[in-house]
Image 1 (cartoon, rainbow, N blue to C red):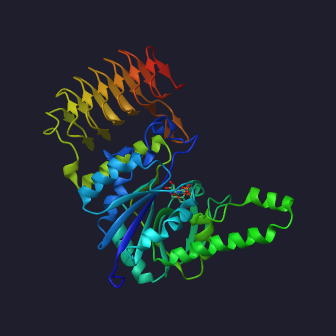
Image 2 (cartoon, rainbow, N blue to C red; image 1 turned 180 degrees about the horizontal axis):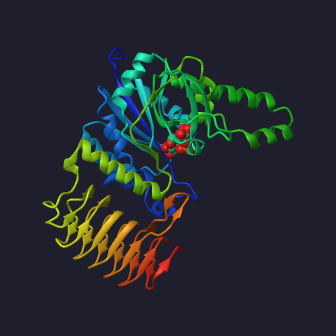
Image 3 (cartoon, rainbow, N blue to C red; image 1 turned 120 degrees about the vertical axis):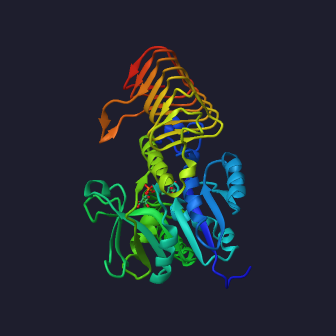
Length: 415
Ligand SMILES: Nc1nc2c(ncn2[C@@H]2O[C@H](COP(=O)(O)OP(=O)(O)O[C@H]3O[C@H](CO)[C@@H](O)[C@H](O)[C@@H]3O)[C@@H](O)[C@H]2O)c(=O)[nH]1
């Protein structure tokens, strides 16, 4: 392998199925990284952004989902983008840095000069090309994409202080209890391969500490209860925090949109952000009245080519309709995600909602939202294969898969 040429490998951390996730009603049967936002799988957005980096040789998705769940997607995206995309399965969670280190030999086979590391569950314009240029100018081991958020929101993320002139990362605290800064870590990084040495150092240090403390069995027990195994390394707490202020890490500020996607409510919001992004970068991806057989399209809308829309339906803004959906006459859709194989019958209304795969919505029914929780609309989420009978109104409910709703419901979780 020629190591003199500049080569880039991208690694996207996709995590794995976790019990009690806030995405549960939708991720029971489907991995969250493949959930469609603006008609494309969540992970598709960072992959297409990576493709714009010159000399990209390989994209790896690292997670602890079963391999078969990603098989179809990675083969189709590899063909579409003409770049090799592979899913690498961890035998257990190793943490955001440990997972990268776990596959270091494979990643280094291509002899990359740089590694782009991305959290899968963030939504942004991924300004990787400009960030890459900045990273090369800074000359450090790593560059972190950062954004200013409101002081009230900042403590949900890694808060950091950066030198206003050199952009050096001076201080980093992960989700601090007391306010540090309104500048936060976006979960988008560019590293040189030296990142592997930094992770290895943490791992070795942990191992040595564990050996030293293995003095009495009681002490060892206490120690084990409050530490992680040596191969579990978190990028933020274990790497970024200790390396801040050592002229190794730098920041690149984005003024574009950025959100984290932990809840279905956020997926609806991020779908709208990506639709608006498509509007400016690839408007041909959005629907217009010509390709939906003259149904009325309002604002930014995505319609899969296999979906069938009645000419009298009115759709938008912020609507994304997936494969084989059937939308009947007089239907009104606003701010919603309609997943594969859904049928929406005559004169039904779906607003501020996500309708799961193979669900059916009866005639004159309403799927809608009312009221807010923590400043967010309480959207309705129908899991897979939910049937809503004719003239039923479902307001701000979460309905788990395979339920049939025969009467109207409001603000309920239907198991
Ligand atoms: N493969 C793999 N992925 C993992 C693992 N643990 C976490 N991840 C993935 O790594 C990313 C970060 O997840 P967390 O470590 O749970 O952190 P977080 O709460 O999402 O916060 C991080 O991201 C924020 C930006 O969204 C940052 O603001 C924050 O500082 C932190 O880095 C996610 O994409 C998650 O799926 C693991 O063991 N294995």
